[in-house]
Image (cartoon, rainbow, N blue to C red):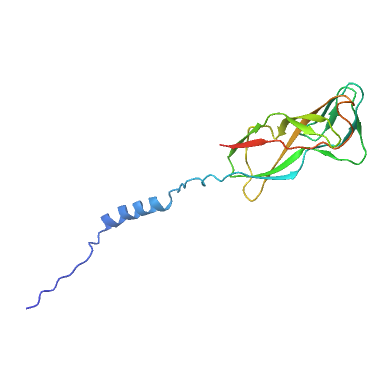
Length: 174
């Protein structure tokens, strides 16, 4: 005689209903995922800091470019419009949304002139103001403008010419 074994499921209305409810509970649950991993901030210079043309008298003074791009002078400096452009330094920043970015300006820098003399450059404030939170989603970018102030001596210590140099800004990502 052969033994026949049947394996089957117990079908009961009282068992199917609770299983269906549990299954539906998991289907409609909101899944929460981890935020994207930190992306190192990407910084690209798109425009250099420029103060344009100006002339000075016996006293000297300062020339300032605001973070909004406006140019002003103090002392006996006269701003000239001779086709030399003035501008903020402009950066394109790419980072994950929610990344907080702070700026740390380096020390004041002495800019040597092509005909002697030197000017003192102080890096100014930024627009948007530091610290700020990135809201753009890559590959979109945030534009950052930074101004500065030149301290100019008298015409004897700063003869006419081109003045240039390098300054440092540290971008801190949190």
